[in-house]
Length: 573
Image 1 (tube, rainbow, N blue to C red):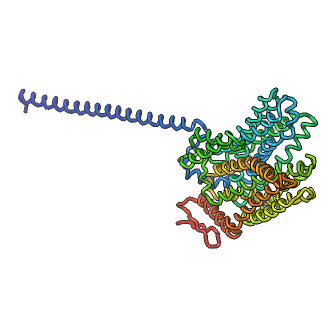
Image 2: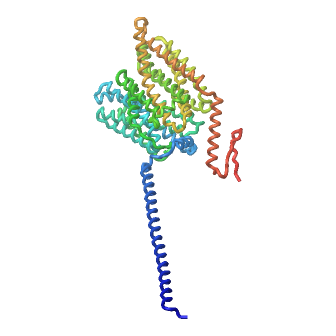
Image 3: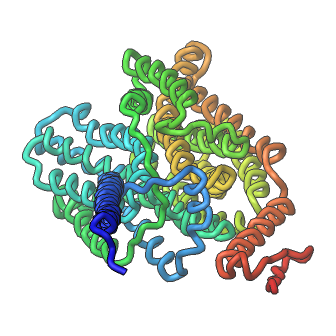
């Protein structure tokens, strides 16, 4: 049946409307698709931009490869387990490298004492001016050591060690080719900066790469190296100055350090964990005035500035969230005892270095050669006893060494209190040998013991702090005991036939008191042998436990330590 025109129009209109609906729907879908695509593109663009910005930010932060941002907790864990990651062969190579570098640096500290006369003659300067080649070296080292804590924490070990060697080599080269005194002094100051950094790094590296049960022996051999070097350096330097000229001292040193530099390039690796730390400029300036002013030990304005700066420095470090040198390690009782013992040892050693020559040359009227020969056996004994003391510490702990050192040192210093003008020179020398052995058996072990009691992440701060104490106490000891001797001698000059001798006797009595303090620390201030072994055993078990955790995934295994100390690995189903 044919449709009427009206019906056809309605059908056409309906079809047209449907087509419009379909077209509108398709158009809307296309528009939505385009809009969604644009939105997605914009979102992707924004996300990519953010990712790129984050990557650039991370890249900028880590553009300096020396800078590693880790938390304090992560830094502590890395420092604790560092020795587990180093093979025995690599450990030995690094130890040899560190020792040679430190020996060269420390030898140059005292080498010029016998070479000063020809240098003074060549540059036409006074004796007081020439002394700045040695006192300036000590001053620069005392300023550098606190700074080393920041540098070691902030920068990678290998690169920093190489920088220290190059710095030392630069100073040696300048001194070798110096044409006047200012140039020579500049070279010496640069040498001191390199030497100070090398010695600070050396101690921290050894304490980090060796397991706790071997640190005593390692530090003992290190003590032999750094102890013997300043004793034999003046003799070697004197021979070179007399035979081939004083400049050859620097030629030999350069040859040694070039070999060390090459060796470092091949065997050295990054052994110390690093983290981001802010450089506190004001604290560094205060530390320079503190350790510089006190090290000069000049009674007057310089010393006063040093004392005031030290008060401000201590206050700032104790109240800072990120101290330049974290002296809060001294709150640890064992570390504090180790620091006080180190101070006492250096007061005695450096005071004796001045007092003995005065006794032999001014009281007994012996030559400088006889005086040197009389004290040389004691100085060598102090150095060569160090490795044996380190082994004893590893096996028996610190208590036995403190007791032995305190008793023998106290008795020997009391014996020297009774020496007269008629006492045989070799009797004094033998007493001095006993005294030096007593001090030598404790010098390095007490540092190792004290450092073992503070968190591993604070090793750099602990090392820098105790080394700063050592340098400052050495400088103070020289001035203090000479001042005591002079004051006592002036006070009794009308009543005593030998007032200077009486002053020297009083100095040795004070040294006996310092030695008695060491004895008291041995009696009351440290653990016994059994506790030492128990702590080492417990630490060893924990190290094994941690190693097993790393070897087996947590989801697959767990481990228990039974009462006998054995590790039981339990595989989970």
